[in-house]
Image 1 (spheres, helix red, strand yellow):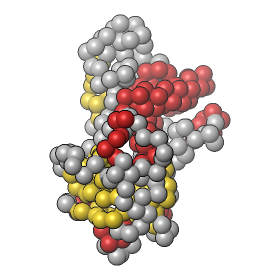
Image 2 (cartoon, one colour; image 1 turned 90 degrees about the vertical axis):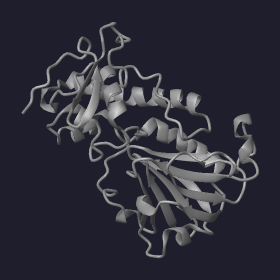
Image 3 (cartoon, rainbow, N blue to C red; image 1 turned 30 degrees about the vertical axis):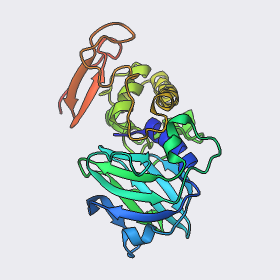
Image 4 (cartoon, one colour; image 1 turned 135 degrees about the vertical axis):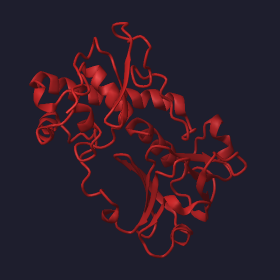
Length: 289
């Protein structure tokens, strides 16, 4: 699942290459992922609109369109965006293709994006059909939009506000981190990374955390995500359909040595998700209830 670091970099790329462009044609290959909240048809409701800005809110990418219309994209588990020239081979399970009016709006174009000078397509692919593309004139109509908590990197999310919001939850720390009502942008992978860098067992219950551990968790959340954005930016470039995570410390590294202590990284499936952690650096035990 693309999370805050990947989505932040995708937003940066789209700001450069699609803002100011007009959607000239929409090809819907598989409509299952589409949610037209305007009532006028998804393709018809997009065609002819220009893209005025691109932003991220939590795990949503938000394309603001002319006419006060929005295209909100939630990639979920397996959704991918591909920005490319028309002749580029399509990703498997490509669902929707937006054909744009021309090259990027920025004057400088890096060599790896040369093919985007004269025309481009923004494609959505999803092998599991789990993502959603919402076309709407009112973002509040999107399920769960109004209930989302602050962004994990929002300047307004101070340590004190983090503590205050955390007090409302009594469950396991990892589960709280990926709860969009607590903070937005964190998923399974980066919850593992944050817990590791904080030295906290991911299945600890919130009431067992000391004030010092909560501060460590907050600082680890900010530093882990900020550093990951740097790493993803370097690795992804304009290939926004990729999900570079080779630099992660523990997630997806089950059985490999812990980068901090050398012990074998644990991998268990619990609460319907895969979790990686170091038992030596993050001591604790999983008690079934």
